[in-house]
Length: 524
Image (cartoon, rainbow, N blue to C red):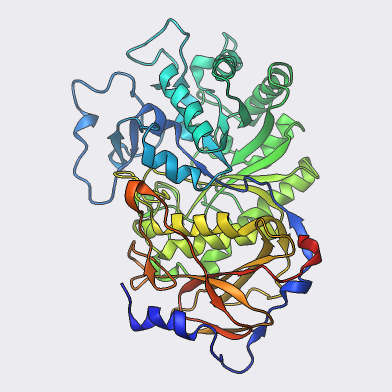
């Protein structure tokens, strides 16, 4: 579908821009860091794998399964403590063997596949001869051996390395209430028996929300510190190659984060109690809670009108600054991993499925790489509004196309674009993937009304994402609708050649530039 606005992208991007255009200098952009080859990653919630009650779609009818006399036998996942059960709806286990899902995930590889989330804290993994119809006492869900085998097989097919966390609910504890590694050992041993491995793990998901995550009554920082030391000793002996991540907290920043949430522990207290021991410092970030959770102990919500504002986008930086300061104090020099991120907690806002949220997604990738974060795992690949793919049929949402272009163009070496962030224009630069001396740029115009002008000293290939409706799901690349081909083949993401000179970024568009002939010495 072509419109005058979209056609202008093809005809006018290399035309003269207004006076005062910002100059780009790809040849001399300095290297400022590197990121993990699997920097761009994603989450598949443990609850997706087992089946259970996850965030109810907006406008959905009441969930009959909540009161059904014959619930799915192995999906019995409870509502997290303190949450309204009306916010959730039953979903059957995801079919990780689906060819479309595997093909689209492979398009983002290599990546990390994180299988965790709130429900992972209370999920039981059985012995080989067990097939419980309901969770044992002290657990609220069951992960079958076949389901975990599907995870291992999926990771292999998608060129993904598994990241997870372990059960920490009352069922994992001895008579004194101390965590025991039996469940973790069982999962790791079975994974190895399948020829797979767990690359990295957090002890538990979001320990600063331990009560919500199913921890024993009265669980506090001291208990976490005690348990983490048991976990650390276990991993170093049983799985010495596993990267220990932690603490994996969420909802805090210097300006207050999620605000006052009942029984929320402070990450500083957790770190004091646990002492040093992580191989990488992990944290989670949501810029807000979604409309589903408005009024649930926090006023931290947002609107689609704010989705391109500097206040909204910069929340990423505020959260990183908060957790980085804790890293510097307690685990200096350790790499930082963002193991869970999306637009909003509680399943995402209604517009998380639209082109509008693609700006936030790519801004975070560009901004966090520039600040040294090594891995960013988006929540989720599939489930709920914030997924990269539609949970009904696995068709790509706009963010997926942005993710695919990032994977195609942005290499692991991070450069200084030389363009300061300002309202309307963000510019990020990496070495061009697979092209010695080449440079790739990500340029976003977040101004809904005005164009942005830049000057490029050499020819390049342009990839511009745009949408006739920012709140819609259809996105165009250089004026052509992006869709899957026959047999769910990914389309050829071809750049449009542009000459050296001035170029214009139309309002509310995202442009990648590939400059293979940049001759940047940092990229050789």
